[in-house]
Image (cartoon, rainbow, N blue to C red):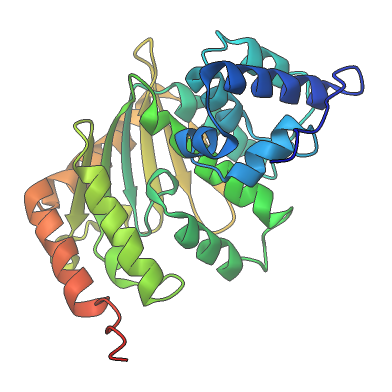
Length: 281
C-alpha cells in the first residue's frame, strides 16, 4: 500500500483542514472507506478532502466533526474555508435551519432530499440540468451530506408525507426507483422516522402546487420552507407558519397510516419496479 501523501498545512486552510481530518481518522483507527461510510460519501471524496483538493458543504463538515469527535474544531475551521455551496441564498438559509432542527415535517410530490438515494439524486439533477448552475458532483455531495443528520447520536424526529405520485413517477429508471423505495422502507424502520403516503383520492388541493417543510428549532421556534421548480421561500412569521402547519396537518390526516403506507410502497415495488429476471445461463 502506498504511503499517504504528505500534507503541508501551511499551504492553505484546506490543507490544514485535511490534515486535521486525516489525523482524527487515523486516531480512530479507520480507513478512508470506513470514514466515508459513516458520513455517506465515497472513500475517494474523503481522500480529496484530506489532501485539500476538494471543498465540502457545511453539513458534511459538521458530520465529520461529529463522528471524529472534533468537538467543533472542524466546524469552526470550515467557516474560514470560503466555500460557497452551489445553491441560492434561500436554500442555504434553509440548510442552516435544517441542520439544527429537532423535528421535521415534510410533504412532497417527489422523495425529499434527506431520503433520496445517490442514484435518485443524480437522476434528479440530470433531469434538471437546464437550470442547474454549478458543478453537479458538488451538488450531489451536498445533498447526500445533508443526510448525515439522520445518523447523529440524537437525530431529529422526521415525518415524511409523500404524494402517491412520488412512488409512481419514474425518476431515472425502474431500478433507481426500486432501490429508492427500498431505502424509504428501511428509513421507516428507524424509531424517529415516519413515512406516510397521501393517496390520489385524498389529495389536498392546498398542498398540490409544491413541497412543504416545517422545521421545529431547538428553542421551540418554527420555520416553513416551500419550494417550486426554480424558487424557494423561507417563512418565519408565526401567523404564516401557523397557516402552513394547518395545511400539513390536513395532509397528514388524509394520508395512509405508516404501516398501510409501507404496504403500498411494497406493492408498488412488486408491481411497477420488479427485480430484473435472473440470467438463466
